[in-house]
Length: 196
Image (cartoon, one colour):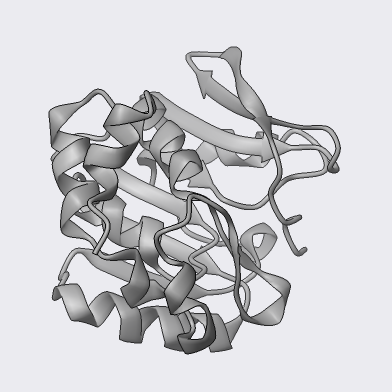
């Protein structure tokens, strides 16, 4: 098992000891299809079902560092995928609500997440544009790219909440950090497009 926290710290992507510990604890292999498990130690994105991908660990690290998740945070994740990053978030937050378009991915992610016995994760199968919840969140993270600025998510943000999302078609895409009506560009990235 690769201790991704240590590796990503040595590579300059992780600094927060809490995040390093979480990345060390979770085995990426537990969240990959059987045919790709041998590639779990590579810092590369890996193909999943339904045309989806699991991000490279360094990308998860970048998002985790910017998110600055704490134990009181209610988190909305857009794009459950394999459940790997969902599980990472769950060890740092109070609760994670993760939205996934594909029901097949939801079923698989539940199986993967169950290996870590998390009771603070809720998985919801739906289109994010049809997401009719009145709850607000401290942190919203999308692992799928929007074609335009997702201003509809602002209504789901608590005061001083953080929003992290990729935007654009690849190339180029940009990862955006939004807080208190201010935006910062985190990095140039490559994510699958969000499905509407």
